[in-house]
Length: 202
Image (cartoon, rainbow, N blue to C red; front, top):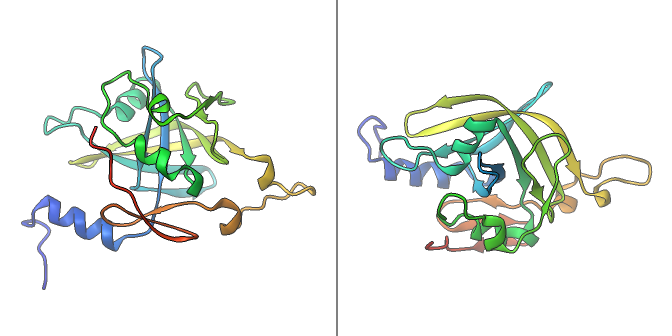
């Protein structure tokens, strides 16, 4: 079967792409609103694109057909700052909780029972429980039609102490990091195999 992307239904393309391009890393993005509210949301259309300079990017869909921005996009447009927190197996349930559609200004940190730690350079906090986090400043926002691609310059990297050896070397093996990848549907992949988590209804 050959599928013409110009005429295929968007939902069909989404299901094919998310199942075929997997596992995908998860950007667990924390931002702050103009009213100092905190937002935390996961995005699996995410990757790193440059090491020199360090640049990462993730894409977010819009909140409606009028391209009204989701909270993460609105906050980054407003102040240009965000933190990408890396999800490991300990935090997969909490991460899933933060995917709920909450009213603007209601904290996903509180919903998921997560603590906040101050960032070193940017205003939004990182998730205190994560072992790796990237403090970023907006480089560009590119409208892709049905979504927006956000590119960020990484200004500072947080690494948990146990990811550094006594000799000052980083220990970033797959076993040490234990990061989670997103598959199609409700499926995730970690070092211990396949996991299935239904997204919260609200």
